Length: 396
Image 1: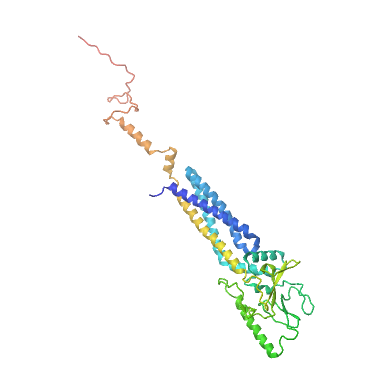
Image 2: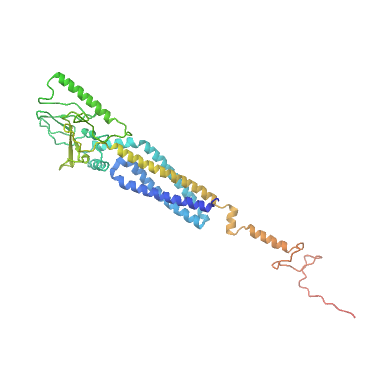
């Protein structure tokens, strides 16, 4: 059995109201929980705020439509259809925006995360944002924990010559066998830079030095390949260990990590950094998160944008379908006159039947409601109703 227009309209109006509520809840949830991460989640938060507005408007349109249909306010059908059309256009715009942002999400998150890490020690806002993200997602660095080798987390450290390290100096501390200290520079091209080794017991001959250079080049190649893994591949978050040497790094390799990277063994400090934990390749310490933050953050942003896009599709379809339903329910001109009593075919038919019932050709009894005038067939226009009854004289 086919549903009537009123039932169809009521069903669609209720669905518009439900998806408006879902839009509103999703938008306010994302905006509330992820706005504290600033520009890293800016894309999804901005889209969520826009969808929050659409959710409010969709909820209002749904309520208005339900009231209009259930009460059959015909004069409000057109305004309700116009509001539903506007809702469909706004939702369609949100859908197009979501598709565009979804294609750029990973690249945008990467650029903002890199900026926040590079300004970790110079901007307090970046420090809090990165620490919050690493704590929430249990991650460290951008692609993996070694990314922190390019950020100076110990600006007051003292090297072998007694000079104080500045922002452009090393973050990696190397201790030689004789107790002297040297550093790995943090060049822009990668994590591992050139080394300056002092003291005895490191390389005793030129051949050993060449062997060490080849080993360092091999280590550099392995480290670069690790950093260049695609983000869509799942990484093993366990720390690979080869003969007690993590990632085949030099045994005297050491790096400071933010306290938010540490799972244990961190050292609190009184400066603005809040504390650090130290990785030492020699002892294979694993008291820190290994995986980078780019993958979980990108997955979260893409999931949020995709979810909002799916809801936009449903709400846009419902809005346009509801416009068609309302246009079908709007009465035509004659139907509107019937509704207002200006034209009623039933009344006209009954009147014609009354007229016919008083006709001389109608064998049925004349209608008691018909006004018959006293007239003559000889003179139809002459009214004899005022004449007295004639008197008759009978002669015997």
